[in-house]
Structures are given as structure tokens and as C-alpha cells.
Length: 146
Image (cartoon, rainbow, N blue to C red; front, side):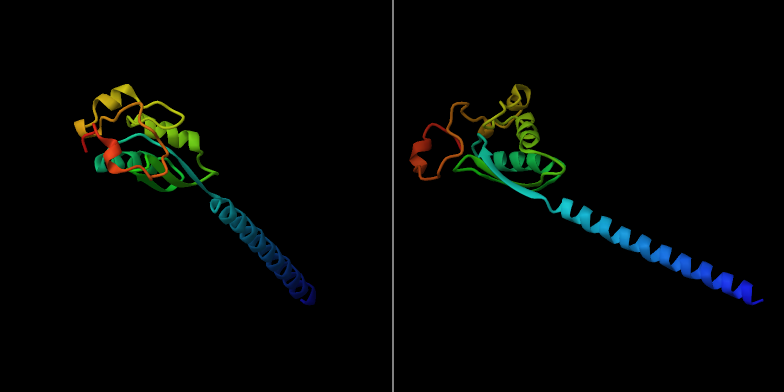
């Protein structure tokens, strides 16, 4: 009888050790995954556009990319600030998504088909400056309908 009880105690002790070891491994994996998910990167680049409707479309395109946490396009400076998880996406993917919605970025020309379908107020000048300092006067934008 003592051998049976001793055997049960040994088996129980071994299974507890095994569970504790497994829990520790799970915790380490979770910490590593959390650290990876916190690899946020910020980027700023130029995007052509004119108005508030452009802002909505550009930001929607950028935010539609998996891994993008935040996108904010500045109508006056013609630039976008994005915050994204570099483990899930990169700046070129964001450039391409914005271009697919019809807007030129510093690295990718906007889709002509998408551009043709933009509202009239969003048809921007393809030669306008991007990623501006914002020190230009509003009068300098003459010729553009807002």
C-alpha cells in the first residue's frame, strides 16, 4: 500500500512540475508576442490632395492597411503622418494603398482610374508641392477650388 501511495505522490509531483514549466513557457511566449506587437513605427510623407473630402479618402486608404494604427493627412502641408506596426506592414504598402485610392504620394503615382472617379473638388494638380512646411499663405493656392 505504501508503494502505491508513494507512486501516486511522485506522479502528482511530476505533473505539477510539468504544468508550472508549461505555464512559464506560455508567459514567455506571450511577453515576446506583446513586445513584437508594440513595434510601432512613425512615418511622414507627402500626398497630393485638395480638401476635407480628400482627407477622408486618404486617411481611410491608409487606415485600411492592416497594421496601421493611425493616419492623419494635413490638407495645407500635403503630408500624412502614419503610425503603424512594422511587423505587419511597411511604408511602401501604405503608399500603394493611398495611390490605389487615386492620390499621388512621394513614391507612387495615384491610380488614374480612381483619380477619374474622385469628386471635382478632389481633382488635384499633379504638379503641386507635397510635404510642405505649411508656411505658404493660403493665397499661394490660387487656382485650386476647395
